[in-house]
Image (cartoon, rainbow, N blue to C red; front, side, top):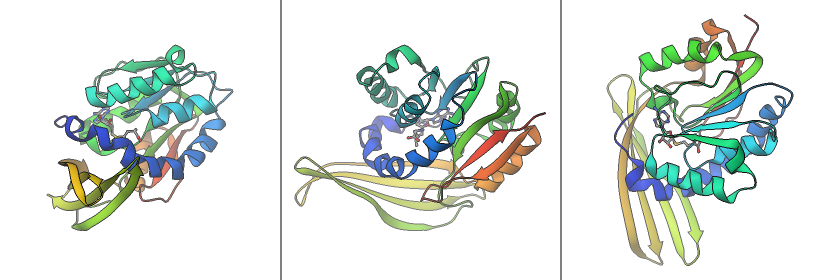
Length: 245
Ligand SMILES: C[S@@+](CC[C@H](N)C(=O)[O-])C[C@H]1O[C@@H](n2cnc3c(N)ncnc32)[C@H](O)[C@@H]1O
């Protein structure tokens, strides 16, 4: 994992992710709803503040959930959501680790791999598909997403969010610059505004391994997964479904 970028900007994460989750949660839950009779746990990789945990818990009330989250900042928000939401504290196990170093649950019905595939290095990602495949039965699935570009390029600064909270408004800008042939450097500016006054500003950047949905599909298919595209929002998502081996 790269440096702990969420230490600086974690407090803004839900402001940025809120709209994407509102747009996509229904489609994610629709796909997950087909797994209610399956055995095995749900593994949420890079749980962040817990949107995926809640979405899975609502639609699969019988499933145990493992939430893998290496960032202490994000885990603070995650645990807060778990403690305040229904029976989640009985069903969700928080794993304070990266996906490269976790011991996988014996059996998995679903894996959520949202907002973090580009943080894994190539070798770790290549090795991950066969490891997951051994824990998954036919029909079980991986829900994943990629970012809006599939190869490094200049992305002009754009205003990603403007969200009023109380008397303040949160603003988020994003800009991208290529970093070599495989990576994009994303630069984010977060501001909390009171009228015209900036009362808090944070700037962070991170490197993302650019991949398209199809790149991921090609990589996972030899390990017994078939691909279906799912949503076409700013952050495209897809499903890798385990087929009989
Ligand atoms: C953009 S957030 C996505 C959060 C959540 N999945 C969502 O969709 O709202 C990316 C998350 O992945 C985590 N992360 C980064 N590298 C990781 C790794 N190697 N293994 C597991 N999680 C990782 C970060 O700490 C962060 O919480």
